[in-house]
Length: 238
Image (cartoon, rainbow, N blue to C red; front, side, top):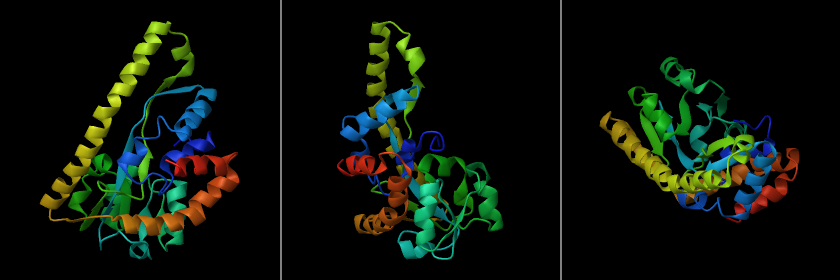
């Protein structure tokens, strides 16, 4: 959400860049993680805990998994980059705020919503949906949701307190990923109990979305963002 001010942070919701929890968990210690940390620190932000959360798709109509499934539908993707990929697949994207999704799907202003399992649970869209594609095995939507603090505040602390924050921040990642995965399971149970048809996205399906993302959102990021092509290359290496 900081992409307007710090374009590099658009990597945190770039479609198909991270497609599994296992891949996301490697970012902290990979070169792309170190580079993103450096960029954010230059803007006054200190990352303490790295967490990625998968995205699921709730639909008031047919199942949405393959690119062809979104053709002609009004889909809320959650970011400019997601919207670019969805448009290329034939969707009419919606920029409705997430807290208005229930009303949007209720009135037909939105046919499908893509967001985290945690959000889809809290929005109670199972009451309006017929199909859910859950991201627990892989997804075209993974969002970086880190714990951050002011670098100025961090730098003003004694060295021992800084070390405690870094240590606890890293230790919290196991809990964060455990709970993110738990919500992926919970959403499947909650929606299934409500009579919603639940399916998953295969690796091959994610690959087909990735081809579209590469030619749209990735290409746009590489052209518009300083050093964008190199950052994408580093991310792809994870």
